Image 1: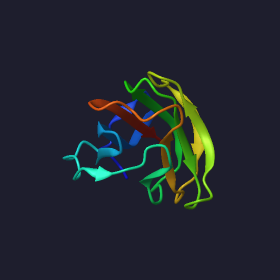
Image 2 (image 1 turned 180 degrees about the vertical axis):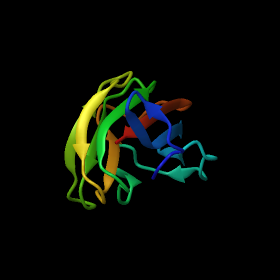
Image 3 (image 1 turned 90 degrees about the horizontal axis):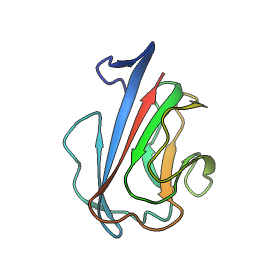
Length: 126
């Protein structure tokens, strides 16, 4: 999950996730600046997987979201997610939070489905 060693101060970026909201229930995810994946049907009001398992311990996240919606980041197995952080419209920069290595990370919109053409970006730091 290392992303070329880019840093924010003394912290190294472990991964960057970009979610392009295409339409109600459709989105594209890209990881670490790569090409967006194929458009996938996602029910954004239920948890969808960002990482099956984190490759390193996350200590800081930065979030930008122009969706205008409240988003929620969670950890845990499918159907047993535990809310970790609610992200207000616009995002939060920075947020010191610890996520251990090998943990499943998911996200969902809790206020409404994001509008088409909006983007959510998350940087995960060590």
